[in-house]
Amino acid sequence: MGVEDKGFNGTQIQALKEAKEKKETHGEMESADPGFLVAQDTCYVGFIVEVDRFYWQTALDTLSNVGFAKVYSQKTSLTAAYLLNDKVLRFFDQHSIRVIRVVPD
Image (tube, rainbow, N blue to C red; front, side):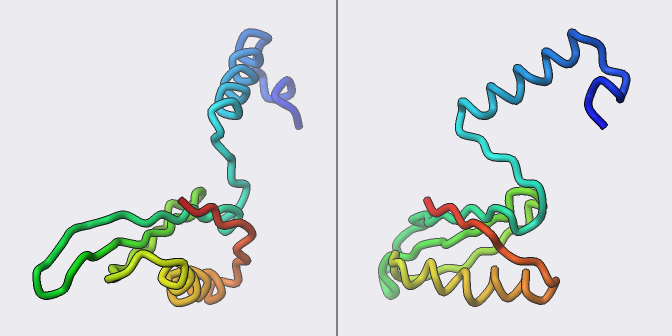
């Protein structure tokens, strides 16, 4: 069933098409299902004298907005992978959802 079948008029259809094009030109991606796209980022949090620097690893499913976070003392690819394996993939596996794409920072 297309937008024409749902009672939209020509002006509304054009506005929807323009909004979609605008999203695409700004690099926004649409997620069709949970697990289709997980965005991951690393953020410097601060410094504690006895501990040293620490970083916050985050991952977010872009459709459901389910988020995961862990604090690490290093900013490495291993800590990013550990968050994915320990938290993200485990969670989605428990719900029988396959993660298709991961976009790093």
